[in-house]
Image (cartoon, rainbow, N blue to C red; front, side, top):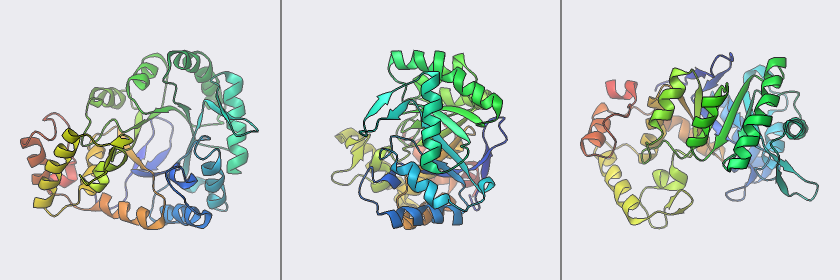
Length: 319
């Protein structure tokens, strides 16, 4: 990938950069991020040619939305695509409550727009409707409300975001979604969602992939204390990542670049990364464009570190 690519989101007319900024880190959710640093991160994102921002009310109890709103103030609205989420409301005492009703959807959107200081968002995701009762309420109540907002032109796209692919697959089987956000479920280490991605591609549904580093280990490598899905990586994962690093080392390619580029080989996907500094934005943008020899991908498959049936980056494979 030598230049930034922009991909369609279903039939909505929206086009997003292949790499987007995840707003959770901006809120200080994973560690302190001063206001000035957060604003500089957003500016660096725009300067790097990235135009897609993902946030949610629960990221820092509204802090992520507020900071994004301040950072985007004065930026022409057509220059970026913004996604936020519904399903969680923030009470005056800063507690969260699940609400997947039609009224809850409308209230959540109104409150998000106030925090963002914007007149509209482009994409609304149903957030973390994992539990059965939440799933049913989201499908029966939240989705019809979102569909009406889409019909009215208030939003452009409807999605659902969570740390699994099974619920999104059920959503897709029952309703007209434009996109999904799936975290940590299609990475160098996890490939069980491949069939779901294939279905999304057939239905012209975009899948935003978060957590492509599996919360750490695919960025840091198999170092002491490496995290895998929010926990200390177990020995078998450490060993597997160590073998992946050995392959990457043969070609002097950092594992972080391979982890960023691998998921993009599937035509249904784009990537969202939780970047918290301008330097991290620039680093990830460069790594996305780093040429990766096709031999590296072939070695990963030959050594049973990637399944034979997963797609690999075409441009890199041809280099």
